[in-house]
Length: 415
Image (cartoon, rainbow, N blue to C red; front, side, top):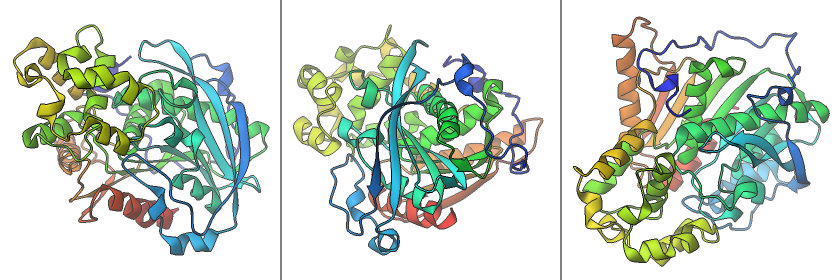
């Protein structure tokens, strides 16, 4: 599946553009995708509760982001409002194309009337308690503005916590996200939740930024998903090109998010498990503790960083992991490339790309490369239509500050 047509230069791009409008006869009429074998099965509820918005939320632990720094002025305006959270499972696929039951959370207004669906891909987490079904994420507050918010856990968290998370296996994760969208339709119909639009909005920051970009890429280039109408996509601080991210850190030999390097290598190994092995890359101390620190999902990112005791790649990885001519390293580089945005892809539905030029976690080079390629591809293709992208690149501070500016300045203010 990874080697599908989205990776072929000269894609026939589907015209899911801003000119597509919600037609009255389709508004609120959801297809029962549980009857379609090639899409996500119906959402099965595991638990649910009402969530009351607090004006001064208690600090929560988080990996690279924290909801404890939420803009209190905005929160005070919605304090006391209630959002209904429903956790459940749905059918999707793993890296082998095998059926698996993943989990995710649905947040909706208690009056059951919504403007639209926002499909949110979450940022990097390490501990299971950080997954959407295990907490009340900031993005869920959009339900107070009249939106249904869908947030998959991703493989490796929630119902699939025993699995290694396929970190930055971006095509696979995007399929997992899309399958939750499909599974939500019969659930929303059964709950008699009225959604005024038949299009959807995508959003995500950090890992969620690249996942959201991939979700749009898949929808617009794969006929199997041509029934999904996209209204807009908000991508913030995303590692759109894992190869670029890797080399920025490799050249510096240090990372401001150290635990992400072992996660990246393990994620790439999942894509090529026949040729990539962790013992080739990891120093003995890291290999010995990998299951405890990463697979158990007991620790958040800061805790793993402390346990690792270093932010230097040269102290995490064996010397052979820096010999680029070795076949294993060539396979590793190829896997990094394959999990970047596809050559030749140009967005059709409106995409808003946000990135702080001073991002300390996801190098700005990712966004700069994305812009350069989106500007370049139409110049060499038969279809000269430019990418439908708005760029917001400025000094918004570090990765965390960028997230707050992205959420409140871009998403909250526009929805």
